Image (cartoon, rainbow, N blue to C red; front, side):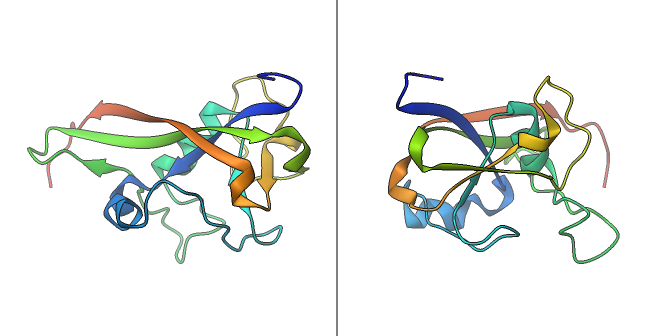
Length: 138
């Protein structure tokens, strides 16, 4: 924990939809999900990257998990976006289960979902851009 009152968490962002987010600003908004409305976060950077990389098959409209990453204007690189978030410890609820079961960065798989119901209790303090080369041809 950052201190007794705050905990660092991550939020995987769909970079391919960033233009829509950029118009609304940097404040979180609660959205509906499996465990009710709130800001869905995780203590696992790897888990956040998995959500930033693709739509979980459990949430996808088809059998194919759609990519959520974006490409640079020159088409040479792909990138994902992950928010670094500081949340008020008393506002964080923990839930069991996750749309992904293959995050192996040491976090308990049963404690990877954290929800903050009041978006004012979760502050974005960093945006991580994770680049990887585009190695395929259309």
